[in-house]
Image 1 (cartoon, one colour):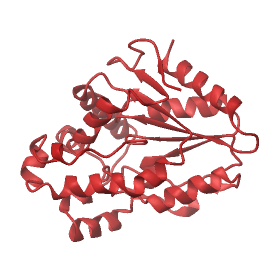
Image 2: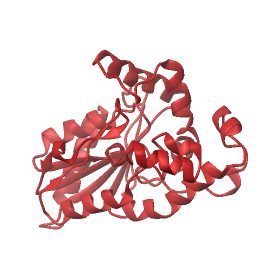
Image 3: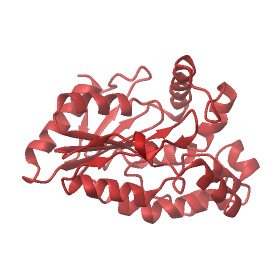
Image 4: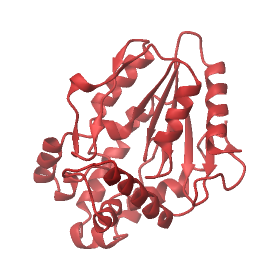
Length: 266
């Protein structure tokens, strides 16, 4: 069985069991490069009335993150960790979809590292199925104790006192849990290890450059290595704790095929 077939079967079952008149909301969590967007698009093509919302499309604007970097910590200029998303926009979007309305879905241009104009947002709905995909969708905050020691060079050199990681962890424990409370079910694409994620993210960036992506968000290989360091701590935490509670866990091989039978906890 492929990850696509497993996720599609999971989604079809969720739709079949949903309350009449209310769309079902499935969260799809997976590290960078795990195939979340591709799988979501394929499920949407197979199930009529599916709306796909990406956590990446909820990033704060570049100007908003610059203000956050000035006010709180310089590392918040880089998109990614909790605290760099517009949670209220996500709540409003999900709530409108759940209510059965037509909704303009936010879009973020990674090459420009900024949100696109609202006039360019696609309008969808009413929806039967809402797929909310993102690298930390459904994540839970870390305990305080593990945050003390730096996990990589970025934390050691640029967050020696731990203020950045403590701040994003507090955001994850707060407003993000309101966002994730909209989920009816949670699926996880589990990378084989953190080390695999770097190769996957490099593939994404190379594809972006090959497609002509330029701008402040475009990165060379060294930039990718630094960029994913922002994600390392929480990604490792997710891979450690989420498999045992996700409604569906798909453990992936390095080539993104299934590395075993799907695990269900419904």
